[in-house]
Image 1 (cartoon, rainbow, N blue to C red):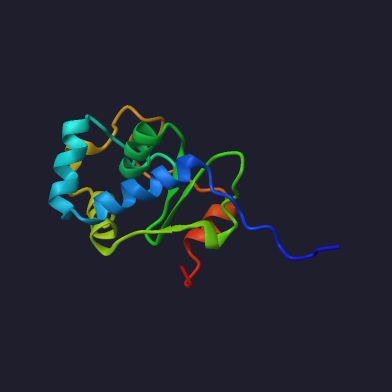
Image 2 (image 1 turned 180 degrees about the vertical axis):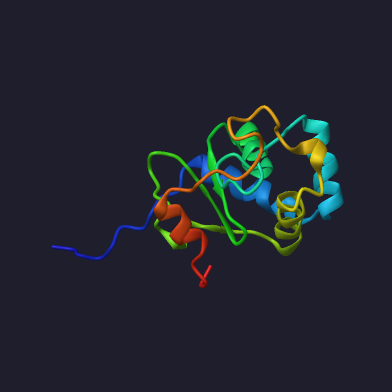
Length: 136
């Protein structure tokens, strides 16, 4: 009987997500802002599931994602947000873009029609713990 762990198979969407993160990683925060404008994407400030980058990635891969400053994970039925090893690292320039957006430096990209008016909504406890994990 073999008790070795079965390697996790990522969905094709996760691979597509990784490619988009890589592409964004080659851009400056200003180039990312312009791309979001060109794509017509808007998002909520400081919300891991509906922030600007999460909405953009959802549009591109067809699945919801959770976006944190240090990592992104797809929100499909085959993964859980408690598996830190599944996080796709966020490049420094993309993190700076997220920080700029969350500081309302791109007001034209804030979704004022969102249920919370584009401002922060409470995260579920598991996500808050993951988001605030200092090891991320």
